[in-house]
Image 1 (cartoon, rainbow, N blue to C red):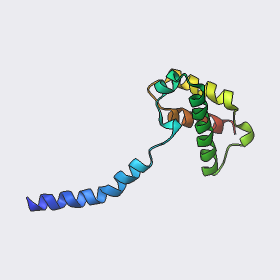
Image 2: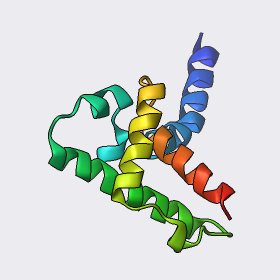
Image 3: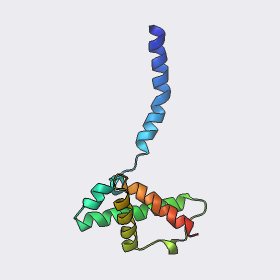
Image 4: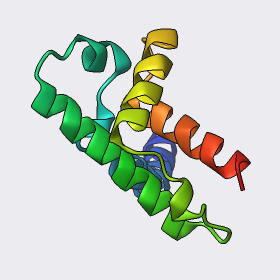
Length: 111
């Protein structure tokens, strides 16, 4: 019985860093909400914050990539909103970050 307890302790110790990393890599901020909640938001200021978050996300992705998207190709606020709205209507159970990844993927196809 003691061997099982020791084995459990070893496994838990080895898994702890991976579990901590998984928790710390979760998206935070306005983009972490689900599409249904985003679509149901009636406050325009909140919607603008989400759109701004999406633009910041795409800027961050652009900086992180070896072959960044030309910033001249970045869509304006209304275009980003239209894209996120369409994505969220089509996939209401997904998240705004999923929509952000999708938008970034679309932008990288334009290169």
